[in-house]
Every structure is written in C-alpha cells, then in structure tokens.
Amino acid sequence: MTLFDKFLRIRELGIFSIIVVFVIVASIIDPRFMTFDSWRAVFLAIPLILVMAMGQMMVIICRHVDISIGSILAFSAIVIGLLFIQFPGLSLWLSLLISAFVGLIMGLINGVIVTRFNVHSIIVTLGTLSLYRGLVFIVSGGRQIDRNDIPEHVVSFSQTSFLFSIPGILIFSAIIVIVSHLVMRHTVLGREIYATGSNPVAAHLKGINVTKVTLFCFGVCGMLAGVAGLFYASRFGYVNPGVTGVGIEFIVIAGVIIGGTSITGGSGSVLGTFLGILLLGIINVALPVLNIPGEFQKAIYGLIIVVALSLDQLIIYRMKKFSGVKNV
Image (tube, rainbow, N blue to C red; front, side):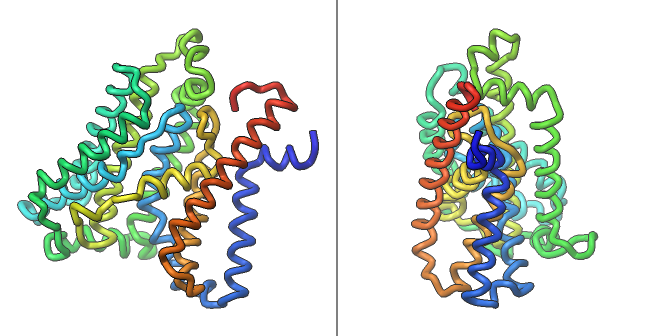
C-alpha cells in the first residue's frame, strides 16, 4: 500500500491539514483573522451546527439521510418560543427537555415511515421537510418570536456560564460530542450502527435488529435538531417561521461528509465530523474578514461538498482495491 493510500485512511488527518493550511493562508492575507474576537465568533458559530451534525452523522452511517432537520429545528424553536410567551419563568433545563422531546417525536416519525414502508429516506424527509415547515406556520400563525419573548436566562445560555464564563451552548455541545463518541466507539449499539450501514442484510443475519437501529438513529437526529432549536433561540434572540432553519440541513450534511462520513454508509467518526464542522465555521467567519462577499459562501460550501464526495469515492475505490473491503 502506498503512502497516499495510508494517508487517505486517516481521513481526520487530511481534514486537520486543510484547516491548518486555510488558517495560515487566511492569517497571512489578513492578520485580523487570528484575533480573539474572530476565534470567539468561530466557536459561537459551530455549536448549533455541531449538535445537529452528531445526529446526522449517525443517520448517514446507517445508510440514510435526514434533510428535514432544518424544519424540525424551526418547529422546536417555535414551540419553545410560544411556551416562553405563556410561561416566562420556564427553566432552561426544562426547555431543553421539551425541545429534545419535540425533535425526538418528529425524528421517529421519519424513521417509522422509512422502515415501515421501505421508502428511501431522501424522499421521506423531503416530504416531512415541507410538512414540518407547514406546521411551523400553523402553530405560530406566521408570528415571529421576538427578543422580548425570550427570557434572559435563555439568552445568557449562549453568552456565559458558571464555568469560566464559557458560553453554555459550547459546554453543552461538547458534552453531546463526547457522549456521541462514546456511543459510536465503545458500545454494542455503536457497532450495530456501523454494521447496519456497512451491510444491512448481513447485519440482520447476524441478529442485529436493523429496524430498531434505524429508528434510534432517526430519533437521535430529530432530538438533537430539537435541542438546536433552543440553541437557535438563545443564540439569535428570535425565531422566524419563514427563515429559521431554512437551508441549514445542507450545511450540516456538508460538514458530516467533509468530516469523512461515507455517503454510502458504514464509515465515519465523531472526530472527523467535528473537524468538518470546525472547517465550515472557520470559513464562515473568514469570508467577511477577508472581504469576500457572503453570496460566495454557498458556492464555496457546494464546491467543498463536491470535492469531499469525490475524495470519499476515491477512498472507497482504493480501499477496495488494496484490502478487498466491499463496504467502507
């Protein structure tokens, strides 16, 4: 096996190398990129996307995809926003539980339709993307949740905390990342997710309940999108039925794929996903600093996805060729 092939196996190293090169180049072009404010902006930009990416990673490893997560985020954010209007004293932790539960139910609906009716997940979640967005307008009556409607203790969650004044959303997202890593790498369930994504038929023959594994992945994906709904309300201070969460699913999927999760299932890691999201966060903050128009951002994301998918297929081809592995 060549050095190139060994390098391709260590996908995280490749992503990390890209991040380092990008940061160095951006810093040379404009030293302002290395200031404290710029990096604070980076780490405040990624928690919402990162939390959703953990769930999406599980779904993609399981050989599916969920493109309804933006609408789930919006619905969860609207529901919790309306509750804040009725109950201004609603605690942060109860708010998180409610948001997570709302997202869990919506994610499980996706999973049930996929497994029960054997419909491709892209088709199912494309439908529920529109369905859930419609519910956002129905429940809210088209009304925006404004800054005055969101309690101060919820807003401060994205600004500070008891731990060295580190924003609470950063701490909470870090906990979710750590738990995700433990589940995927150190539990039987994690191994079953990888096995299901690698070969569902073989996994079933080995006694793995593929349906339950799939439902778990969709449920977690929806639950974390629901949590992200509260993150959104805290971070931005408003929830707009027609804007909140629109298009965010493509950024999340981009980060997961860039992070080395194979679109064909069975392969991926929490570390790679984190690095993929970090790269997108750095790009998001770097563009304004480098005076690059914001409209180029989606084009750059699209280009990165194409490159990542191409590399993913190259990795699969080379690993098949040299190791005889059929599913990576």
